[in-house]
Length: 412
Image (cartoon, rainbow, N blue to C red; front, side, top):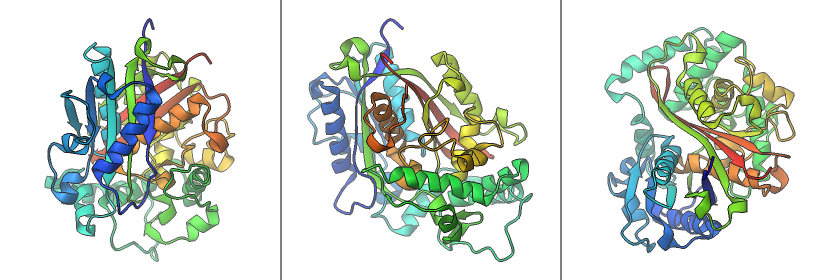
């Protein structure tokens, strides 16, 4: 690559319940951190791509979210592009920014994702999630998912949380299908969760920083079988940001991280048979091809674990472990820091938190930190190639949108 596209700066806020914050205040904090990290001036930014998924449902702000969120920052009259793509919003925004810079339309692009979710009424939260699947065919979708997980029915004495988002039922169906298809177990899903909660102990920005044992996770309150509360991502507030540049324009090229490949795909066509036809796997193949890499090259990954089974599925779709081995890999310690393929060193969505419009950029922030060697107690030794998988929504029996990004540390 003669002049690669790089991440020249990243920024993030703490994730969690932040009752004093707004979408704008969190966006401003993450933006300031990313610009400072990049070493450029705000006036150097040629375009802003802003990600937010829930503000319309939460408080009725259906349009011009980025223009309002960044109105306190003097960026001149550069274009601000608003992106909504369910839980995949932030990495979709990153792809737009990357394309803008690659096309020569801007020397530097700012990408921001910001979300405030904990201050909304419960019905607004539930409505926000309902809007990310086919609301016109809800009954048919429920029936399809019920059938999807029927091979491993819930125990007769299983208890379900009365108030939960529809995506917990979706992931529970995914979990039961995985149990039927590959023989995975609730204990394996709990091992994934325990690993991620242990990782988050060392992440000062994580919503939860408390370790859990497998036994504690299995004994916790059930959301919908086989998922318990620690296996599921929380409702969160937070923001993350990044500056995308040409390497030649980076103020600190030695700290810049190369975007080797980035692919975005949409789902809905999978018939549920061969997992290699799943949108996540097919999108990963495109990203690997663009990057000129294979799964064997990946040293560290952040994947979309809205529940523990999400991590199991996605590391299999990414080719990081064989199909059916995702849960067992966690039990063996392969996906822990120090293992053969560390996954979610940030703690993942389960414990780092999941402010939807910021999640994908939080993954990028973590991987940039890892590739720079700045992750401290959660550092993955020798990390040179990193993968981020960020997905959201549901069409049929697969995610509606999937983004896969491959990053490389320079000079390693």
